[in-house]
Structure formats: structure tokens, C-alpha cells
Length: 562
Image (tube, rainbow, N blue to C red; front, top):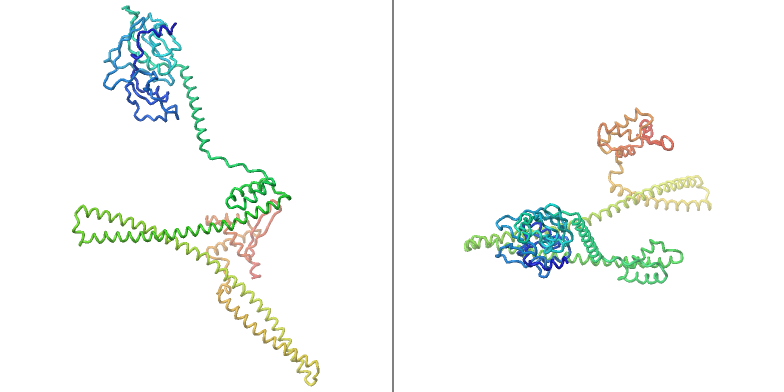
């Protein structure tokens, strides 16, 4: 019955137009619905509006002016002013406010607002009258009327609140009565209701869930596919994997499976030979990969040489261009150009010189890199020569030892020859077979003596040459004290340990020395003491956990042994 009364209202719904008292409230309402804020006349309220910042992210924004939505009447043209007209209802009449007055003030629109405050009602107004006036704006879900001249109206949709605000400022008259209790001036404003806020929060949470779901679906779509699972070991899979490892194209995938099997511990005595053959096949790819790397390095070197040659040609052409500009700048040709032409020529010459210099620096950088690579190769060859020198020194030492052994043998032969000569002088009148044998032995010994002398001469020459190469380093062994500072440290430490007959730890010694010089560290002091074993001696004192290393001064005993 109430619907029938609303449908029989004489006011045409198209005559209802939306107010523009507060553009921000209108923009907030349309933004909540995911629509760009557009005024009643079609103009955009917020020029810098970004549709991606709305609550309905990821959904194409709706156009509130689209025909068929029924939210607002058809837009008026720009040159037609918005005029409020008299509205005739079944039991009352609504008279528009003075158009020269400023629009009525409204509060900030609460989020999700569906409830309006209506003040200035006639004293004789009933709930039926309120339903008749505001029911044409949209479906009403609740009316809370006060005994005083105001009420709260909750609509089913948010956009109907803007239609209700349009009636703010209208004067209401019940029928044709002129009684003061039958008239009133309406004041419509936004109202803050807990139900509206709760529904708005629920809707925001739903939109956030949808947005998270949409993003998750998008991430799942863009996420790279997971690698296929590694198959479990079996005899059949092992035989197939052995064939795949031998194939160059399938080797990366096959070796990953082999690695997984080894990490899982699939190897046992029964299949150890199979795994050994697969590992052997994997090792066979090293030669192939090394060849491929060498081929790529060769191609890279060829590309570098090609680039260097091309860059050199480019630099030469730049030099020619700069020479052309320099020749044109000479007075012979310069005087024949106009002022604008001279300006252009000067600018072009500067640009050509800058580009020429830049390419020259690039070419010089390439050449410097090549020189540095060559110097690195020379430095790598240097240790080889050092190794050869070390081997020569070791050979010289071996020859020296051999020379000493030969000299001892030579002395023994000489003694034996002298003994034979003495025996021969004593038994000269008696000639027998023994004398013949002695003479033969004597001749053999003389020959051996001559050969040994020749060998000794050769060895001595070799040793002398090796000693000349070694220089004076062997004659003058390096001193364990390298600098005057270390000599001072030795003297101070000797004095310190002399007054500590039971020795001191390296930390105790360093704590004393750091009072003199804070830069002294225990490693330096311990290395210095280790190089002087005849002056300082390290001893272990204590047992178990109390074991401690102590340094003692032993210079008075060391002077006797040196």
C-alpha cells in the first residue's frame, strides 16, 4: 500500500536534480563507488583524479552519467542554469529557496553514509508525510522521527542521500493551510550512523579480500614454473641417466639428477659401478667445456681486435674532419664566410673535437688494458725464472757435497799409493810374483788418482760458478735484527727479563713495551724473540689448565755456545 502511494505521487522523478552544495562530499561518494567525480553538468570535479586510487581497484570505473543507471537526471547543458522549481506532492507542496541565497552548509560526508538528518519539519508532519516527500529520492529502510521537528532517514543506497540533500532549503506547506504548525523550512544534512559505518567497513574488507585474491592470482600467473621433481633411483632410471649424461644437450639436467642421488645417499655396493661410470662420463665433459671456453675466448679476442681496428679507422676519420674545420678556420677561407656560417662552423668544430677526444681516450684505454695484460704475463713468468735459480743453487750444493766425498776418496788413494811405494823401496832386491801384483795395483791406483783429480777440478769449477751466482748472501748470512728499532727492542726486553729470572709471558712483556710505544703488537715481539734463540729461550711452566709459555733471558749461556 505504501508503494502504491509512492507511485501515485504527482511529482515527476526527472524534476529532481542533485545539489552541488559540497563538491567534496559528491566526489567522496562517487569515489566510494569507483566512479570518477563528475558534476551534474558533466564537468570533472577533480582534474587530477586517478582511477587506480579508488576503492574498486582493477575494475573499469563506471560513468555515472551513463544512461539507464537512473542515479541522476540527464545532464544539463553548460549555458542553462540550475533552477529549483516548485514540487507538488499529494498532501503538501514544496517551495524552492531564494536562488540568490548561498547554498546551505553541510558537514563532512561520513564514509558509507546512507542516513540523512532532516530538520525544520512542520509540527504537524507525520511519518507518512516524510515517506511521501523523501520516498521519491529512493528506497527508505528506516525512519526515526523525534517529537521535535526533526528526524533521521536511512536509505537503501548511498547515492540516494545526494538526492535527499537536494531538498535542503525547501519550504514545506501542508495542503493549503496557512497555519504556522503546517509549515516549515527543510534542512537536510549528512548523519553519522553506526550501521552505515559497519556496512562500509564490511564492504571495504570484502574489496580488500578481492584485491588480495586478484593480486595472488596475478602473482601465480607471473611466477616461473617450479622445476620438475627429481625421480627416485631405480635400475631403469639409472640406465637412462647414463645415456643422458653422455649427451651434450641433456647433460645439465642429467647431472642435476646425479647430484641429487648422491646427496640422498643412493650409492651402495650393488650400484657403485653404475655411479662410477656416470661420474666418469661427467668428468669426460670437462674437456668439451674447456674447448668451448677456449673457442669463446678466441671469438672474444677476435671481436676485440675487430672493434679496435674499426675504432682506429673511426678516429682517423674524425681527425680528418677536425682537419677540415681547422683548414676552414684559417683566414684564407674564413673571411669568405658569413657571420652565421662562421658561428655554425665554430660550433661544429668544437663538437667534432669533443667526439674525437672521447674516441681517442677509449682507444688509449684499450691499449693500456693490453699493456697491463702483457705486464701481468711477464710477472707470471718471473716466478718460473726464480724457480730455475733455486734449482741451480740446489744442484750446486749437491755438486759441492759430491766434491767433498771425492776429495776424501782421493786422500785415501794417495795414502794407499804412498804405502805401496814404501813397500816397493824396502823389497827392491827381491822380485817375485807379489811384486808384479803390487806394481799393477800401483799403476791402477795412479790412474784412478789422475781421474779423481780431473773430477775434483771439474766439480770445484762448478761450485765456484754457483757461489758467484749466489753472491755475498752466503758469505754474510742475514742478521736476525733487521732495523735499529728491533735492536732497541732487544735491549729493552733483555733488561726487562734480566730482572725477571723466572721468565715472563709475551702478554706481560708487551704490556710493558706498550707503555713506551702503543704501536707494538705481541706478534711482532714474539717473532723477534724467536729469531734470537741464543739470547731468549721459551719454556713451558705449569700443569694442565695452568700451562703457560714464558720467555727467559739466556744471553750469558748463549755467549759461550756461539
